[in-house]
Image 1 (spheres, rainbow over the protein chains, first blue to last red):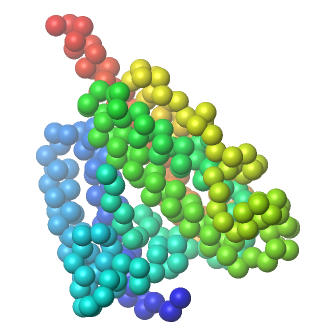
Image 2 (cartoon, chains in turn green, purple):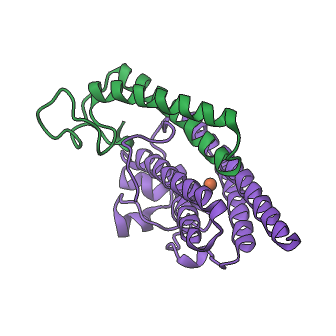
Length: 86
Length: 189
Ligand SMILES: [Fe+2]
């Protein structure tokens, strides 16, 4: 496995922390569906996560099926490392 | 359906190759209160539980699969560079003989995963109480593993998982209250 730049870990951890907020808000909203503030926060973080992932994927390849294949003319799903390899 | 994201829910780092810790962690992979049991338990209960808590079971069940992947990553990283000699020293020679370094769904004592670890009663309160108990048992197991582990990087990820069990338990308790409230309202009208 070739060495990944520090930036890979930084950007990934940023996504992980934003997505963690989304998971937390999701479970909270499952039992508090009419909490308007939580709903607002959820939407904010969902938009932020999408932005971060767009940037990450343009540098390091797709994070999920359905993402645009950027900067490349080949199927890059399997060419970046898997989560347990980094 | 499910969608896979090519990332862990929380970073998993390990300080050193340590098959002994991997041996403990297998408990949370294929053990009675492990992540596989949790995911299968919650997702299976969804079909017969009142609509108000289907979302919660779906979301927690899905998160448990993310935890399963974290545990697998820990075990993989703790054993990938181990020699057969080190595996023997750690007491996982019996696993090695059967599976090499492949992961397998069994508990720390080597007993294979079984569906009898999980229950589905079709009674929403009974099912949710089982879920709360499962979360508390998983939380306790993580605590015992943290107590045995001297790997600071690994313990950071284990503490994250332990805290998730606390939150899941809390949400399941709220689900019980939601259903009780709904039941009482039906009795009144
Ligand atoms: Fe859990």
